[in-house]
Image (cartoon, rainbow, N blue to C red; front, side, top):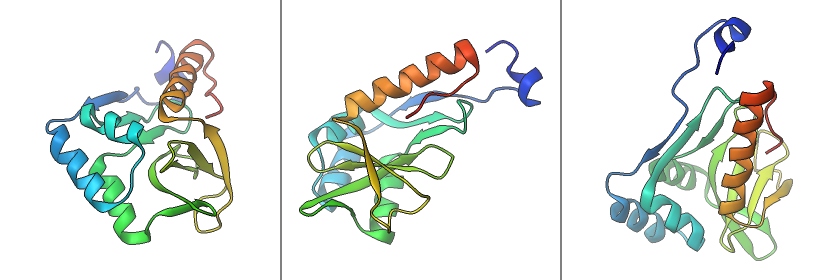
Length: 148
């Protein structure tokens, strides 16, 4: 990321996807707590968390422990009439990402999910991850973040 420090006044941090040490424990804790989309179970079997703090305002996909803390404090997010989801991360600009039990991925329109104003971002977690990849690629090439 040539020129990052010159432009922002500090060196880039560690932007990475961290692998999980005990995927079975993580998945068991998650599935015991709430109904969960299959894609999310698959994701957390391998990935602990994603930290992209230096891409735009940043992007984070929380660890299972982080997801469980949010679930315990606030409960599931009501995405639709008969559809709930779990907050799995944020963009550093106040939006949170929610994966619904049907696998769809939603983004809050404000810094709170209490208002139930959500936009559909991706049909599934895989597409969200692809959109994040495009955002990283765009940021490296142009300095502009994506639109996830």
